[in-house]
Image 1 (cartoon, rainbow, N blue to C red):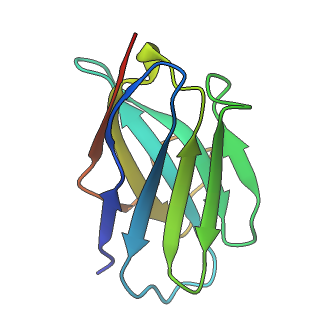
Image 2 (image 1 turned 30 degrees about the vertical axis):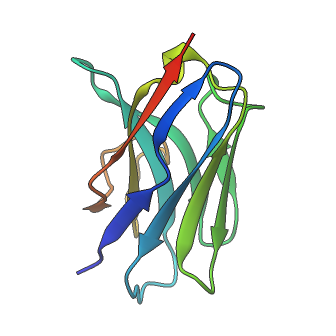
Amino acid sequence: QVQLVESGGGSVQAGGFLRLACAASRYTYTYYWWAWFRQFPGKEREGVAAIDSGGATGYADSVKGRFTNSKDNAKNTLYLQMNSLKPEDTAMYYCARRTGGTSKPLSDSDYTYWGQGTQVTVSS
């Protein structure tokens, strides 16, 4: 069983930045996708950024150029650097991990392991 624990959420003003972290317990699979999702109140979860075990990345159009997804293999931790934050980025952010599947990396369909979420609030 893999456990994912997010941290780093909080409240900032528009234009500010936050860095989210997602620490994973021991994970034995060689290949995986590791991603960030967010959920707005009353709406479905959407993919934000994903990175695979080889370092390939993908981003939602709404965050390209502002968010950077990275991982520290030694610490088994995923990071999401969020710059130039906008009020519309306000959401609960979740990290998730999957080992396979055929859906696109920013689709939540094949993700097996999920963190508890961390709230990001951006005020105007």
